[in-house]
Image (cartoon, rainbow, N blue to C red; front, side, top):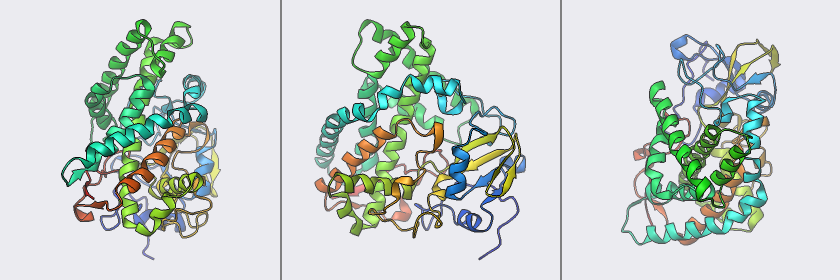
Length: 401
């Protein structure tokens, strides 16, 4: 095995020869130096990289680590990153994190999400029907993967879908690492201003939706109008970007492993497990979860000092052979697939995971039931992957059937 360099630069790019796998360097580090320093910002910061599943979970579940990006040692994607509004509560610690998250907890209870399943199934059917009426090749991203979760989150929030171009544009800016700090803040502000207007609209024309209920919480004094707008903007942003990319990458993965597709077409339990394995295998939050130690703590036998930054690349931890047998293989029948860290772990674990699971469990089997002859219309090497964004995916996916 080749030696690993001292404090190697933290890179995002997955290998061109295997674009669905983590960079090979991190597998080497996981074996040889599972807790090691990497460099950011051309060497001006040297956070710790934690690559083993057990150590990753220890960091993500520990109150000794903060998600606050304003700490001096915080390993932000860009130097000088500003904090997002507190409605984007994943960047806050308790008590603000707990207070903001609590306003939305009921919206994502499994029972409430299950009530959405018929609507998700209906939208899936409508979009696939519309897509199949087009002459191929057809871009799966444009005609299915992106509009489906966008329509679902709009229905959940009470946001007019006709404004989807607006919020998709600003969402792309937020997740793009090439966006300047000013551009990112402008995107946050634009989404919040849009939702602030919708909060006021819902007071006069309420509906059975999240924005209406957040407006009511603001009326009761539990949160401010700005909080209601920012929380809604966060859900609008997070609720479509991640799932859209998971749908597309899962489709690519399954078409590359056709022998696994029958696992996706079985009963509910089999489908649920298949989705967990796809989440583990792909782990599309490929920039790593970022933390800063607020006290000295030992992880994997290494002492991380208060004030030092930590990056947890969950797509690397989810391929740990000490925890997952043959981790680079796709096995939709994997017994412990659900123990992946694709949604994070601990108090900051993704609030919207019940919705993401429901969408994937409905959408992915239906794609392959409706389109059994589905295939990618270009060679894999011609597909442009999103190497410089917080959420991994592809820009477009031409398909035929």
